[in-house]
Length: 141
Image (cartoon, rainbow, N blue to C red):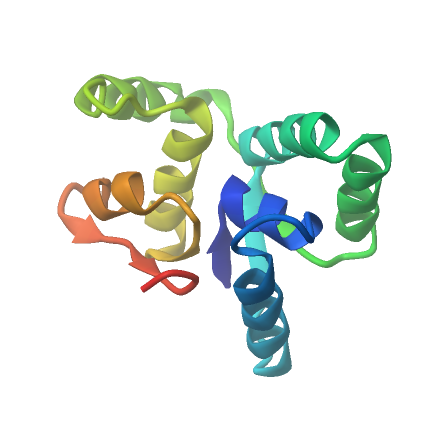
């Protein structure tokens, strides 16, 4: 499974985004190699908000339609994750870390890897999962 961040989803859904072409190519290439994609509800919320405001209503509807058709899975956050989220947001307060990014760090810890598709180079070069493991950005190495 490959972790998908908001910037990847927005680039994929917006043909005017500067990362659209590479996001499309990566999505196709990884899919062709049997990879599956996973994200979190905070990332989905952020993605819908950005698609709605940058492109329009139908862009967010298409994103949710893709989810409904099984294009990606969603990692479920629970109350038991609250302490970890809080600790991460405090640790990276200087960036600052938002809920969507904290959820992806927890997802990496759950999966045991940090293979991610993200346009957020600064943050995902800084964040560490399991305290010291770096992310591997497959979109923009």
